[in-house]
Image (tube, rainbow, N blue to C red; front, side):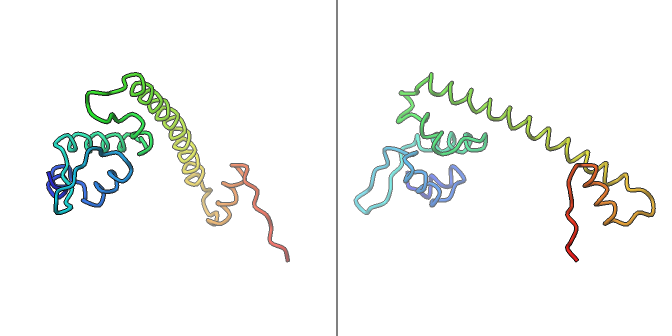
Length: 140
C-alpha cells in the first residue's frame, strides 16, 4: 500500500508516517522501482498501536522498546512491565493533578473571600500573605 492510502486509512499525514519510519517504528517498508514506499497491510495496525500508545502517554522511545518487529514476536514480559510502569506514572500524575486542583480551589476561595470595599491590589496582597508568599517592597 502506498503512503497516501496508509495516511487515509490511519488519519495521519504522510510526513508523520515518514517520521515514524525514520524513528524505526515502521519496519519492512519496501521501495518500488520508482522509489515509492510500499507499506505492508500490518502498517495500519502498527500505526494504530503507536497512536493509541501516544494518547496514553507513551513516548516514541518507550513505544519502540516494546513494539515487535512483527506481530509474532511480542515480548510479553517487556510489554507488561511497560504497561505497569505507565499505569504507575499515570497514578502519580493523578496525585499531582489532584493536589494542583486543591491548591487552585483554595486560591479561588481566598480570592473570592475579598472583604467588601477592599481594593483588588490589597486583596492580592492579603491572599499572598495568607499563602505565605512574601512580596518585597520597592526601594524608594
